[in-house]
Length: 294
Image (tube, rainbow, N blue to C red; front, side):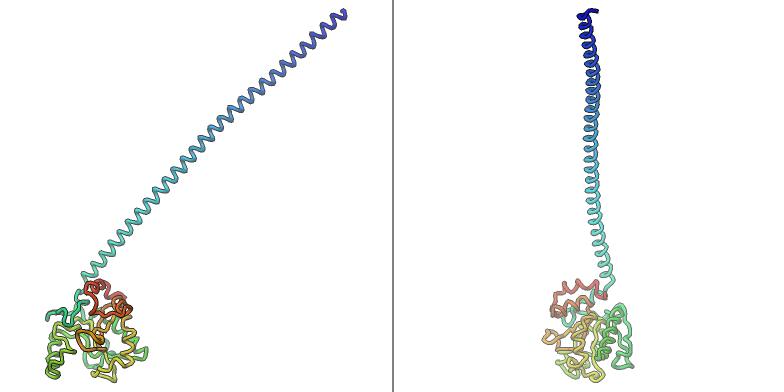
């Protein structure tokens, strides 16, 4: 072969190699392109899936929040219902107690309201004889008031100020006889310290006259005794109030005469330095349902 032929063959071989190289390179580039395209497609698909999942999660969170809000609203409704039920139950309980409580117990007597001759407390009990001025005599008190009275008398004794019952429940007839006897002795002056029948707090069975062993039936100076002073400071804690304080418009000052009106009302009157007969009757009546509560 001539040198020229050798050169032509070399050129041809070189061209063939170049073509093969280009072909191989192009195939590789094509493959790479295909892989890149596939990857891009997968990435786009994953992005779409991620976006879809994010939307689903957001939707789920929104649903959860909506459910939580709905639950909160229902709980609030249930709370309102419970409060309403509680209020109704309280009202029913109060009405039931009122229906079972003698409405006369907190009325203003003493020349204001009148108790007829047929009125008798719903239940009376004997006061323990250890608290009786006259052990041979029976002293009665409203059964519901008895534990309050005896607790007070017991605590007074423990405090070094023993007290005795001079008078307690008196019927319409008893008050009539007592007033007649006072009129015989004191004439018209009896009206200053003794109620007419039907106007006495004693007929309610919730009032007592207290004294000491030393004073006996002469209780005029009762206020200055240890017992009188102790009552002034502590009687309200047991539901008792002084019916006729100094300067009242009904009778002379009677530091020995104490009436049970319930702990709540007695405490209110004590804390506000107020008197039972100066208070509005409608206000007083709001305490009736709970008169025997501790």
